Image 1 (spheres, rainbow, N blue to C red):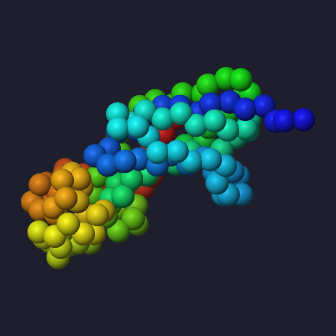
Image 2: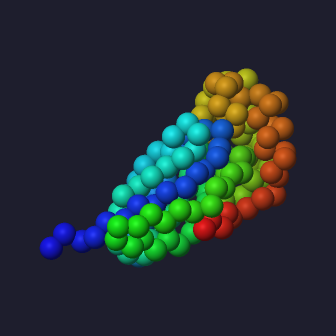
Image 3: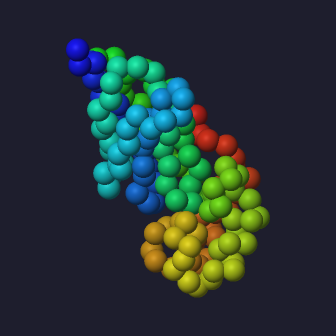
Length: 141
């Protein structure tokens, strides 16, 4: 018998492409999709409970628990990811700002190009400054 499937949907806003991943309770990946340019996504998965994670390079992640039931769509609220976590340690701090400074005005690493304009400069530092000291995965539901 084929397990019933449902859909997980929503919208994630960030200045870069966002990956949405559903993780099983054992942390294995049940499914993954890249959100559209407008942040909308839809992911088909077997009925069950998962941890949903939205991520983009240089941004704090969003994470929440999602229950998917067969034949139904579970839609999470729209959320904006916070730019500035360049090193991926879940804190926007001086080390992220330093990465921008060291790589000014290069194009790499891509995670430091927070506004996705192909150059690391003061515009990226301004974005980081607006989110300075934010930390942890954002609660997503």
